[in-house]
Image (cartoon, rainbow, N blue to C red):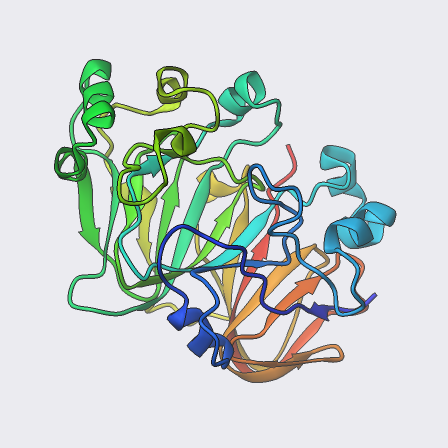
Length: 327
């Protein structure tokens, strides 16, 4: 098997953005604010939207299901079956995203009949505008009745004021545990790694979604808010500045992310041998190749576990995203 270049895959979203993705990929069409890279995950409520296709026209999901061991490796298949256990996106926030949170594995299993919740992480690869910021976790403990009132009254100012707010720049990474309230500010362009679901509970729906019913996954807010972490969050352990590190392989997250996904930034000058693993590769800078696949800035590639002697060659910088460490 060989690595395979995959094209843009931009299902419709409710918020503005996409110009940074178009520039990154070198296209003229700002088709939308999210590009689901090598995705085997569909949008919530739409079984077809969000799925990636291979150059031969097959859905990547179907190709993996037909022959999972060469794609994913025997150990991964033993733990997860033909589930990649990973979703990778390019996300360009053309406006501030609403305050929202995602279910944990336990909440998803109990209420959504799904093995995976949606812990996620962000690798900042670009920023624009005077104030590129993100919001993560409450600064102080918040009683449940207060959150319910904010959601009922759609008090956006109170929600944002209650969150930790901090600036970000390229090279920063942010780990976002399930249940943690968060929002991404306008002008922040990221590679997002996450568990392979489209589960979002949107606390701040007015001005973003058509109505309140679109924000709670059909559960009703009374139930959906039970998965929200209302405790004070120290964000320092969740944020890393990695821009200054230029080792051949730079781990982008601490071990706390390993049960959900892994990522490293590869700095290639000459060649780098890749260990066998299913992976999604996103080229940030430079040119080179991976087997028969020519690489340049904006290239996105899916790498099977059984890829024949995967060697990155050239002068380039890339983010390699991989599934969780098997438990």
